Length: 175
Image (cartoon, rainbow, N blue to C red):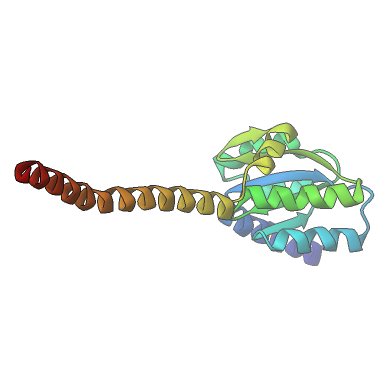
């Protein structure tokens, strides 16, 4: 019994550490998944710097007990849950989950938590539909580059226009 209690305490400590590093979490009903499928989901999420933990709801409840901003998550702690803890890019983590779900058709997105606010599965899907951070950066860089190009062309045109104006004035003076 003492070993089991120590094991549970280790799991809670690990979960606390993961929760402390996460900016978002979402909860997935994983019932019916094989070990290989859960491993596949974990591998897909790893690319987005996210961790998928399958653990008992009571252990997750203990892990978030001292963190007020995580308390709304307790509403989702029913049934068989896998917890996806997202460190950096929520959009890419949700996209990775959606691709997995499309391939397996065995899981259900229950909801999630972002900055202390409970999110429905529809709200999570909307986050997944947003462009990735890399795409947004590329779009912003493209827009800035376009403005800079137009500005450079405009600045280059000023001396040319001035030279044409001076030439026209000198031609009128000569005539």
